[in-house]
Amino acid sequence: MTTAKAEVRARFSPSPTGTPHVGLIRTVLFNWAFARHHGGTLVFRIEDTDASRDSEESYHALLDGLRWLNIDWDEGPEVGGPDGPYRQSERGDIYADITRRLLEAGELYESFSSNEEVEARRKAAGQDPKLGYDNADRELTDEQKAAFLAEGREPVLRLRMPAHDIAFDDVVRGEIVFKVGSVPDPVLVRANGAPLYTLTNPVDDALMRITHVLRGEDLLPSTPRQIALYEALQRIGVTTFTPRFGHLPLVRGDGNKKLSKRDPQSNLFNYRERGFVPEGMLNYLALLGWSIAEDRDIFTMDEMIAAFDISKVNANSARFDVKKAESINGEHIRRLAPEVFVERVIPYLVSAKILAENPSSTDLDALRAISPLVQERVTVLSEVATMVRFLFTPEEEFTPEPESAAKALGADAAPVLDASIAALEGVGTWTTTAIEEALKAALIDGLGLKPRKAFAPVRVAATGRTVSPPLYESLELLGRERSLSRLRAARA
Image 1 (cartoon, one colour):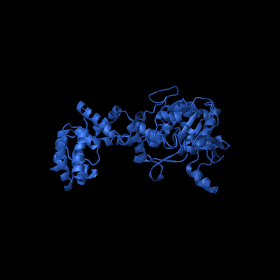
Image 2: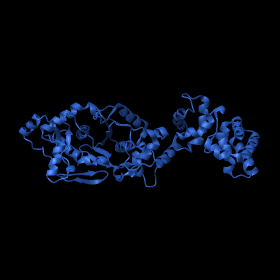
Image 3: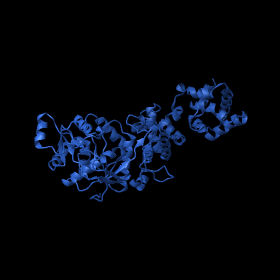
Image 4: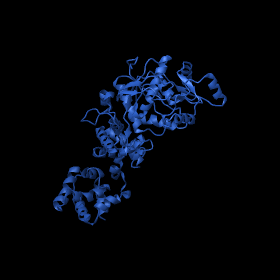
């Protein structure tokens, strides 16, 4: 099946239900990279015709998530374009017109059979009721239709599936064939006149001249129905071609189960709240079915766009591995320019009540000073709060974490703290180098301790935690008086 236009036009068309799902965002990302790689157009439209499930809150959450990830689009909400409106709830007149034309051309027909009647006919014929609709209403006479209407029945509108196999070349999976008769005539319009996804999705693709439909493999069973509708739309002059399809691998969670919307692991905003950066999140999502090279996991979005080849997407399911996602995110955090890192961290420190909403210049200077020490050590931005809290806590409020104190500030810590206090009191210029020399001389040379035993009490006394930024640098930033005050308090 060839397209009539050389320009690539891809799309993503989510339903605004719940919070954005990482699997959905991965699909958006692949469409975005595909369109950008080919210098084409990316269309974003909202499939919001299910009033019982769709919500404005979810719609705005979707926009928020895409803006956070810096995924842009060429046509759609907030951007506009020649084929609007881009929300299906605002396209009712368009669907009504196309439905009328399809019905007049005989591509659609009225179907009155109830589910119970279809099941009874299947059983009477010795067939499995799960086979679904049996196409029995295709050739109803006007008299039969009138009789059903007189009974108060209201028909749905079904599409006549073609009398031939439906075959297509999936850009991810290769040749796929659905045998003639294997797909019953689908309902496109409800009895109340409301169009279903089976109508609206292909109609919008046709009117928006979409050349490539890249979507999740869970939608593969609906593809023959959509291709049959494209053929019907061509016959009535709505479009001149059928787009290419590519079915992307499912994203699975723990236990290799499909990652459902109810699983917290699927919620995009959980990762933002934990401190994933857009660069890291997108890099990891890109790896769920694609790779830039066999021996390379870390790349920028510009590098992905340059290298993206849809035919290289793996058809096998991909598992969402949080640990790997964190590792990749940490790599991108380390790539941030120092001033960008500070800017990204501030909201997390405000949320943790470490910084005020409008931090003072003194606090910002302190944050800039300690940032290089923590930027190399965190995998998500929220971890920064626990690592820098010691520096911003007033002395009257500072206490070591109980668990850390229990590990490092027992009775055997007393001689270590005594020696440390004596050594640090004698330091002339309060610098990292001088602090390191004094503590090593006192604890390793003087007391004969191994580093882990020597420095753990000092670290917990000064920073409150067994895991902190580098000790000597932390003491320098804390200052002589605050450092000694904390060591003395711990000794007491």
